[in-house]
Image (cartoon, rainbow, N blue to C red; front, top):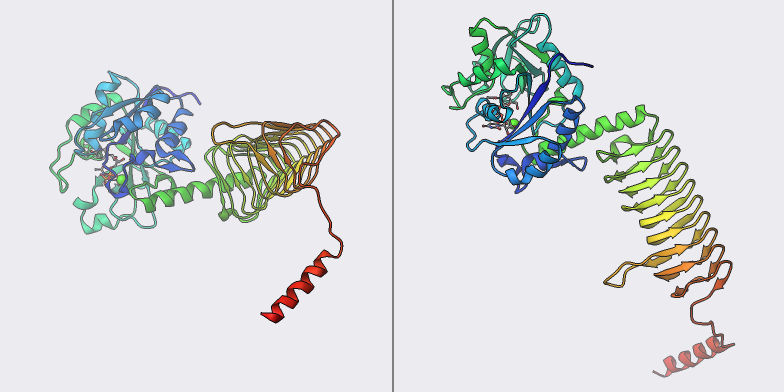
Length: 452
Ligand code: UD1
Ligand code: CA
């Protein structure tokens, strides 16, 4: 969609976040493994803003890297004198920017691009409101500021909870705080906002009343309450995470993925999943996972930084760690851990195995209890297993080591030397048998016990 004018985003994040009880800046706390602020900036970037300014108080150095990486600017609000004051802090950084301004909150990361676009579009509707405010109707309106509006969305009054009468508090249309305005309207209005109110703060919603005094109308648009959910405490962080997960599960299912028990599957912000993949209950995804089509992730598996090709089956109780690449129709079974290792198509590691820094050829069979000994306490080494090789149970493959294609390693081997293709390697103590010896031992001990 082409917009009439450029827009700049001002993201407020100067609040102290006291209730988080954290040394980490509130907007850096993760949702689905990604900082809240990064979620917001990512969604924002889909609309190509001309400028992004993040207003911070303490902890500038913590957020600087992320904001700069996303091409935004940081401004500091030394004292948190209120939301209107915070937005004003962005004016010098915008340096006479002449487009629209979108005001967002760094601790309200679930807002969708459609809602942002709607805010900007509403600003340029024929009635040209001075301000567009996003309202919502939460189940519990708590202490949110209230919006008194006509049925057509024209705002009659905005009032903070602390300053509201009982009748005003009874209104359930709440102020999300998010707003859009033209820069040429916004900054002159902000300069006129005072702090003569119950909190002694410069209230951003006051710009609506000031515009009304000038004969300019403002409009409210409504968003879903989940989109406006803010994070002020760890409990709210968990609620926002739950909401993000709920929506991600719905999207996965809409995309053709079966979730047997959706509420028990936890996605990361970047999980990619092909059609007809089935995810059984209690599966957790860390970042960097890409699942092909028709994959099956069985119950209680943990998958992170892994690529799984079509038709592969993982779990139950499997762990894929970063750098795991599982080929088509390959099989990683219970209590198998795979790290920086590639399993070729049709390869199998069905039980109780560790495969790290390894390459396993197509259709190789890795027996139960096989361990690639990849680390000597100082360096990591690679294990290479050829196509169709068979590794007997409880083998230790001491890397660096190569097992040739079609080779067979006897169970219980400790393999320290390369094995040629199609050879059998037996690297364990030879079996000794002493005929009748068990019986003699038993008789002797029985006698001894009687005498004692
Ligand atoms: C504000 C609104 C209220 C709305 C609520 C929604 C005002 C006066 N009130 O409440 O109507 O229902 O948000 O959550 O605007 N911030 C700064 N600098 C400041 C103060 C705040 O950057 O000086 C930032 C905070 O980091 C936060 C956001 O602004 O991201 C909102 O601040 P917060 O104190 O949570 O909101 P309230 O003022 O209580
Ligand atoms: Ca808040």
